[in-house]
Image (cartoon, rainbow, N blue to C red; front, side, top):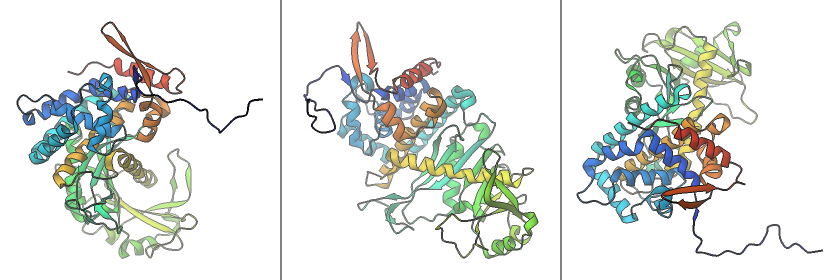
Length: 458
């Protein structure tokens, strides 16, 4: 009987292998770029910044960095993993060329940011039309979630400062379009701010909302079909007045701070006026009730605003606050949606928690840190991160089905993008042969077939 040594087989490792492609599953992102026309749009947007006799197209260089970030990179040098696979990604610029481009775009300031954002908005509208019933606006309404993100800095970067959580770094304000329970979400705003920026600064929320609305198709840039959701950071008079201004007429659902007036009004609500909260499936949520407040609490706020308070038994170990009452955790939000049950409105606002999932995905896709020094450079980096997140949202939207459409970036990288393949050249054709024993090869093949069936852009 042969004796086993260790738990894993011993293999001999040698270099110099040919015809093997790592990260072969990333061809899904490459095909998404091609079918959505993102490469053409970004190249056209950055054409004014292409130097005469330049070898590399600035749009291609920027997209290469975004692809590297989508595959898990967190700095400009990580574009090297694309450079190692020219059969999949084509010619990739050198590290100095990439750095010089970022410096050039940072110098361009708002003109560059506007050009990139307009290109993304144009492609986004095309992607939603391709997605059909799976598009985030298929139900006739678009939901945009605004939320702040703390990004820690480990060195003295421009605008890095102490944050409200006693860390050091930046405090960007992000916006995401919610894809609902059946999908993920896509970024539509990223406002770079110093670490000491306030959580409830109305001017920043207004600017982030403007950026988000500019990313939507024109029919959703005003009117009740667009819902803006925020936590209590958006519950300010200035921001709510801006959302409900004449000619804008946006729907909103914003968290509110429990003031003394709201606390006293909630305590006086009779037991018969509390309605059980509900879950997404329609069943009653145990230990949670909602009620609508009126009277003096609405003085000074826009006409048509509804104030809804929720009380819930805290989970074991939770510490109650001074604003809680009778052992119940109190939360409150405001909305201008009329004619709908308060339990349904509270459920809709509670689903804003999906923005935390989007933030977690962003942290795993280049937002764990801001790798550059100057604020203008890091704002360009935020645009790159958004392009990467767009691709990670559009590819599942157009190519994946069922549960795979809800996979977050880390799972996409582990199961799909990291698949290896053998490169075969036949005549003038290059073929990637994925490993037959890889559990998700069939998912990759099916997704590529769905992308291939889409019409060519333009």
